Length: 494
Image (cartoon, rainbow, N blue to C red; front, side):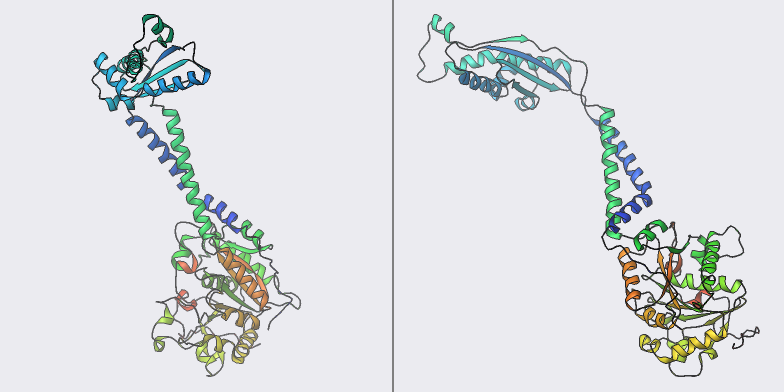
């Protein structure tokens, strides 16, 4: 039944640019988080600015008259020494004693900075406190205490002769306050605009880093355009998310505004539109690139869409491997209905295990009891004979299989069927898994009907198999229990 004339040839991107696509998609998906981080950063900046204590700064300027005998290097060294002396404990203690300021030496030292321009004889002492008057008094006290401290230190040098008045005037460096400090009532520190802007920028960076990390770790498919560029080929259909579909697993075809129903009808048109000529599509395998892509939901709803058009359709549950724990296959085998595995085990014809559903023109072959050798059973000649039998009896045979990530069953069944439909889910399927799935099908020489993007754009609720995790096709079609006799007759062999 394999038909090599059917299918799309995909050439997935191997340059590694999927991280860029995923990051861009993550930014789009998490823009609310990014904006929230920016707002939180702005609020934090506002709060911190409000809690800051206003600081007032004052500066006093001192001019030193160098000694005539001093060279330039000696003058520079002396200037550096005076600058350090302005913040020394000895000078600060003298200044506090003379000014009577109620401060400790450590507090005064922390509030004081001193400096001098390179090659200049001018020194500047600057103080910053929470009171403008205190800042000005402290700066002036330090400047006034510098000459006496220098004189005292020079006189304390051992072996220094007592200078005469003439030599003292000639050798002494004179230090004069040329600009005393004045109180500045304009406070510094509460710069609301700057701090709020920095907070917004910091929050924005955190949000972008979060989105980048999500994109870098996930590297998941997002929208149709990205997937199409990645595959270098068209996306066959994009199934939008619907809340009712996530809850029940079945599209509401009675609502004319149901976007998922409209998309599945377009997919049906694509499938039926390729039936002319020798490349007839009678049997289609539906599989996912990874577990949880919603391939069972797509298989069931595609079968319903085909049946609603009047075609006789049979849905075969061949997802025998990779069913999550807690599913029907994890239950006692005796509680499962007879179905595909019963037939593959050597009993009867596959047509004997067909049951009608409550939907017109739609029949079902359930998976049957759980088995441990599903790949060996599916690779047997009986499956090829059974699908041929169904293709002669029905217009369309839709085969639901496990994902390509979980099992090699889709490759085995795909060689027998006419084509394989690959399902990827927005926000769930990784680009690497989609690339691997397409490459595995190509290496196995399996015709790919196309890729269907499921659940785009992805909402807060889950979609497809994720919402109906672990359910098989017969559980999704639970209107009528599989195996229940229905009065509607099955289509006759053609």
